[in-house]
Image 1 (tube, rainbow, N blue to C red):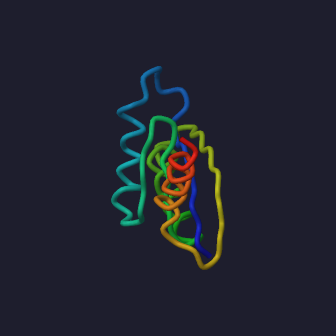
Image 2 (cartoon, rainbow, N blue to C red):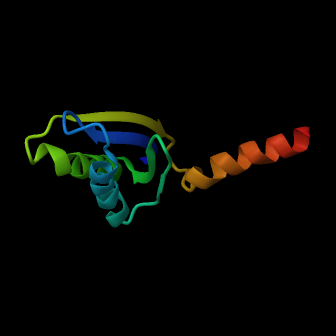
Length: 101
């Protein structure tokens, strides 16, 4: 089942500046081999449902395996039979905006 998720994973109670910690979770996502894109508020991951959820779980485990309370925010778009949506969804909106100007 083709899935595109936006996920935010962060440890709770480890300080105010979380960049160093969040980078550890993002490294797990990038090392997964699944298409991904990180922005200031989340990381998008694209792949089959089970693969994507495993990567999310592995990334959260960076903190939970240390006994750290972890916040995970996940938004999923499941569209069977369609792939490459991380790029094509943005391209479609940009094309429409270009036509309107």
